[in-house]
Image (cartoon, rainbow, N blue to C red; front, side, top):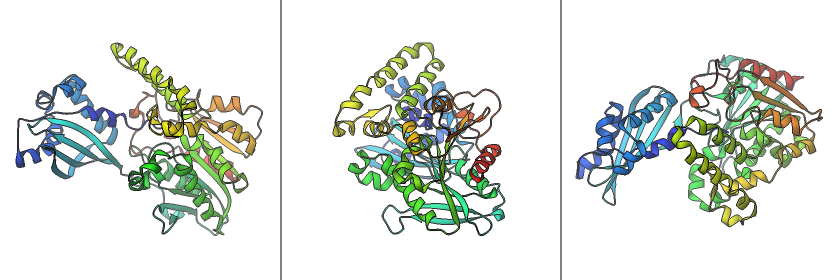
Length: 445
């Protein structure tokens, strides 16, 4: 799974402050703090922080290190795009949008009536996709809409090879978290790369904004829907509509399902829900047959040795406490599960994921599967990914495997040993051309 930007959590702790202000001065304070940070005034900001924030940050150097992670993750800072502020309960609440090379970051800044910055959080990160380097004359793209006219109509792109067809086609399912149709993360656009690369090899594809990305407004406005949100709403609904669209297009032949990360983990379930006879096969990129919580558990355990020595025991205790919730997840009522989290995710959502055994579902379907694993993936390691698939699908002729020694979780080749954090994902990197070629060859053969 993509352990979405740790900087989002870290920045929730930032809270410098200014001298007591009021009126227009107070309204301007949120922007002033952001400007000070961009000017490198970390000592003054830290010295004017509340006691709680100073304790959380540790020092001005800690603040500086945290702030530096923004450019490490998002590319070079460019400019402040907009700022607004309003008074709420005697405090100034500011919303400030800043442009970085690969994303626009929206900060929420709260300043108390006496000029203390109460919080500084990353409210949103809007990715900016790097320009495609593919020759756009070598394939055709068409805008598509899933559920046109409905409140939750979703936009996407159909990419077709040049010619009349019929072409084999893949439906692309993203990994965890809200993602656009290109899967844009840190300036990398894996699904656009895959779609265009496949088209050059004679394979069509359809990709679309993920439901949790396209309809945050609907989810926010409907607490009941958000509480009961599962794979059915997040994946199966859109994949089903994409399938219908492809089936009605005379330019399309055999249809395949392609999933990355969580999308790969649930691929057999989605295929089963939509009807196995509708698909010629599936491509699983960096997925696992293990439940999501177990992957998260392993990710957390791997991070503990990287912490300072005096932090490791506390971190281990926190991970153990989270793992201890497993029994409750299996036995509590739906209402109780909807009000709690399990490894930072809705416990109701986690239980829904555990309700379907990916490997047994795949065996029951018997559809051809191409299972891809990168040797430098620290989010779903080979031990949690391909190794487990091979054990659980032992002797199943429908499963084929491809292992790429230097491939990371974002499907890009990288040199050297991975750091095990987001510095491994270099903005502008492209999905391995060898991988795309192998997928196309598997489909066409």
